[in-house]
Length: 321
Image (tube, rainbow, N blue to C red; front, side, top):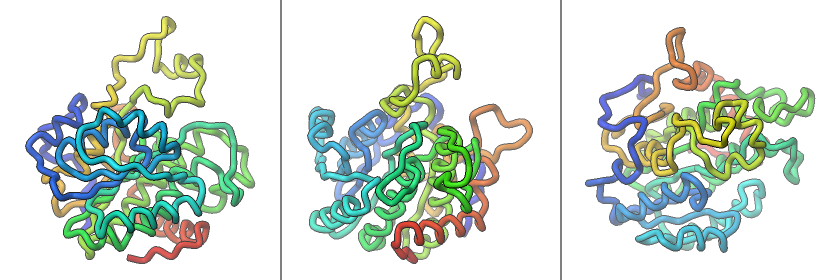
């Protein structure tokens, strides 16, 4: 059953932290996987899951760096190499995961790149779409049997309010025929994350697998590595003296909505929705505050199905739960 894209009664909000979300939730016996779970909000996502008792597998492009960054995390954390821009690395990582566990209860597709200059992977695919969307599409497809083996698995796609910049151009996702704009590419990729969750939930609900997407909030993390300080000042993220805007969240707060989507009992029986601030987001309308809400295009079921079909063709991976 399709879940309405509308807020529910949640006791959490904008400044809630990941630790507050899992307080009182026992994840003992659960197996979770987090991509990019060693930088920024990914680290806090892993910390919250492991702290609540879950066994957490972290997919990391730089495993040695991940081991350093996660050294102070209490609980069961395992690290394995994963480069989401490399199909062979994705398949090798998935095989490694199969060797480690016979089921997967939580999959958080967290890793991302943002607003980088035009680069392409070995297949010629634009890097933001390839890494943020196609890499996670292929990974989820490979891990599907483990998700289906869980009694109540959840897949969480970390999207962004950046989706409001526009949906995917299915006729030219790689910017072969239009001028490349780094923010247009980011918006396309983040919209793809949300549309992926919408379609996965439709296909997976009958197997007990529900999917969610979310905006974590503005957080100062290495995700901004491709932006100059001048650009960030112009966007209001920092003031002229280098002080971070007070609308930004801490990494602990930024991880909260991912953890809420992955663990909250309030979402039992629900799925396919885009969330923000530890709640289901409202659909953008005339009175919606700026930088909030779900744009109508990420609720477009036909677009979600079209993106799914295109993703199968581009990856060569047939994914039909």
